[in-house]
Length: 103
Image (cartoon, rainbow, N blue to C red):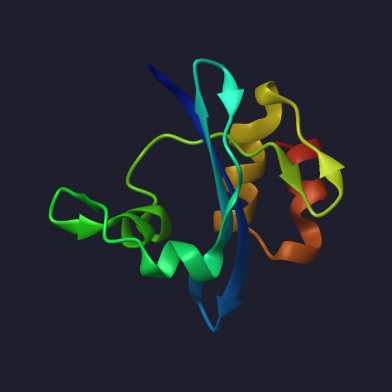
């Protein structure tokens, strides 16, 4: 068995200047087939450790490469993912699309 990818549905929020991430659910793909989504309340119960940290804490810290596929209901192409990531991290959120279009 091989884990092909992991999809995380998250709520991103800004509190002052701090950007916070709360996973809402996680889907693991094994041999290209998705397993049942693990909801947030069950993620909290998991005691899976990666580099001496809980899985949920690793997800929140974002110390890995990731691709943004959707923001709210808007699909994001793989080629634009980096620009949207940069916009979400650096620009006011009401100007995310403007940032991406004019970068």
